[in-house]
Image 1 (cartoon, rainbow, N blue to C red):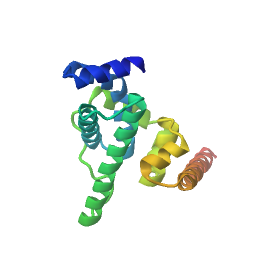
Image 2: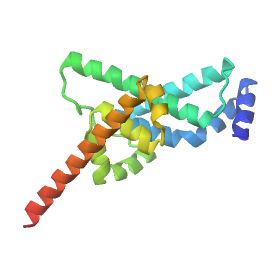
Image 3: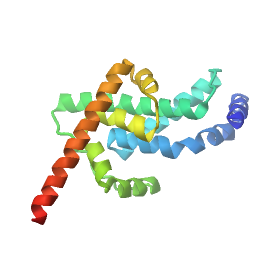
Image 4: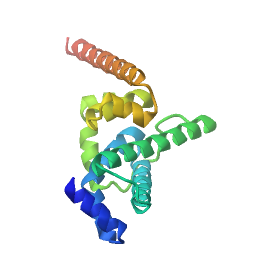
Length: 188
């Protein structure tokens, strides 16, 4: 954390490389989280760019940032959620079905890793949840955010976050049980 404060200071004094050194350790995880929330590598890249731009502006305006890693993680998740809301409104207006994004023809190295992870059963189940439940699962278990941090980020009451987590867990359990019933039926 001491290094973060030094990078912040250097960045505020015009060292452009300092900003890169500051965000570099957090980019992969922020990108992964955005992809899971948005179901789109292109939108995740946009969310990450928006996060970096906002982070740079905040630093240059002198915002006090005590733990840059945690702050940037929340910022990136928030920008991904913003894009998810915009996307949901666009889908509603155009009456398109979910999941009609064109295939990603230029997969990034991180995308290859995410594709490998996507093939795991649990991640597929998490991805099938609606955005409200998927988001709290990702933030709580993947980003390791507390209930209060998630509540603050999503502007919800902690009880609502707990309720969404509980519902998401029940939905995941139900999906798991249904998939196991199918496997037993096919194996007989």
